[in-house]
Image 1 (spheres, one colour):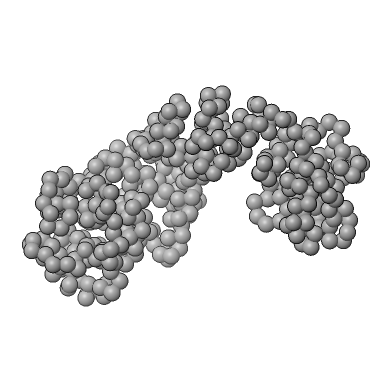
Image 2 (spheres, rainbow, N blue to C red):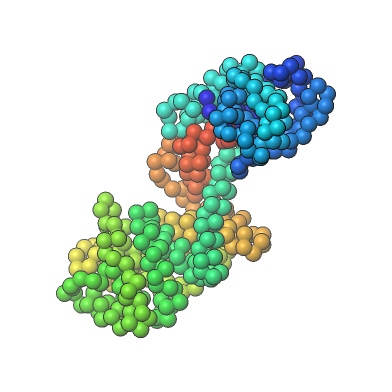
Length: 425
């Protein structure tokens, strides 16, 4: 039994309210359970009840046992003096406010449907990664759609908040912020942090000053990334070293460069090596120096995909790392471009609408997701096994968030799907 189950019972009033009395013997009528409080203090605010016909307005506190009031020290906390009702699963002792007055208590265990409790426990205790896997076929499609839509908007706003934090650190410079988000996302999960650091120690405004020379842009990126701190025999890396030696002195960059050990190569496909991704990043900025406009120009997904098609310099069409020849395509694949659009363009659009308070950008973001292919990973495959449609990136992003926010945390009570299963027991 978790206290969240009692929050669920009280919030939605899923208990027998006929002939309702407090444990002290007062007749109880619930006018309003109140507003759920996610901050410190009593669990529900603005509750309204009738006790023996007299109306009380205040706060409601929820506990598994009445004695938890004392265990949590509420009897000495002024914030709990205006609690008008104590709702518990099991009443084991009376409790008082600071002034010594007894708090009316409602015990829920005798008034709760046993089947509801069993359904809740089956969701909470089963070992399936998706707790409702064996029951989700009972849920109408509209509730699943609601859960996915809600999860997606939460995911987009969470990503937008990260962008807004960067924007604040960048003194409201959207170009630098876009540059940092793009670099971070090209690192994917494994190298996202060193890529973000690289973008921070090499500002876009410096990189763009050398936009007419891809070699110089590569020299700045590979040098700041720490990849040029070694001996070479190939002409290309030697040229990069020479360019970086001059440019790093000019812009006083050398002391802020990353170390080679910060980059991860193990268990990565060669096409995902950070060396390849840096070369692709250089080519993309060389082609599109105004990144913010590229991603927020409200272009259709196909057009944006085409604009992000790039080819690296000749060297990186034959290498995955310095001085190791191999065959490679040297361009960004469709899946990599879609990843950039999903994790860079889409949250930028949402963040920009939040900032400008203009309509259209979030809608374009969701339209863009609907035009992109769904991601294929362990989470999306689990939903597909349950016959849940994952038709595009909108669905895959939503299903990932639904799993991470609710399923993996066993937060079935706040999930529309779990909520439906409990209500329709």
